[in-house]
Image (cartoon, rainbow, N blue to C red; front, side, top):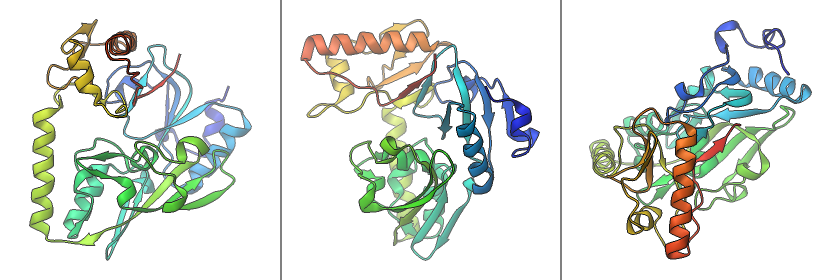
Length: 301
């Protein structure tokens, strides 16, 4: 079990939070503490950190914006790494964009728009990080990252090897990428966009955001669409047709606005969410023979 004095040669005290409550760092607003929440600010710190964690056999996970994550009530028995500092930078040169893994997809889309670049409008309303967007091949409104990503820079989980993945090496498909299998830590992502007309880009982003607000429960904590889209179906439609929309367990509820969302309506626990998830899965399988798989990553004890 790693100790704080082992971390201090790499990070200073402001970059280390012991027993950080994960409910404060995830969009679901549920979850117990992790052992340490760490904020490396550049590749050198991250490399040394990964090397130390590997050497000490300390379990760890990379936290993006915490928008596709459910942490259990007893927390995560290891270290959580959240990119900071240099990993928040976004650089634009012509039609090429380089973004740090910790930057938000919203800021990425806005940077592109401010430079008159089109191609990332769909990402403006996705509440995730650049690293998470690459990891999940995030998408919305007929756009997805595979259309615009050209290269992804990574570190191996032991910090020993840097690598650059070209698009054809990423194995991108619906909500999937090679990074889910290889475990490499994403540090930066490159995109290739096109010049457009600024006001048209901004208008499209506002239009998609208004559409999102009208159809999704953005006023309550959630992890976005809870289930992956099953082949030939829509998860929300199946849940609605099963008569489950609006159903609640404890403080967790199937959103009356969009049945594909489980929301934290009243200080829900992770146990509430998991119980409701299982109820949805059982009912949909029983009524329609379709198995719903969580899109949300579930971690902890």
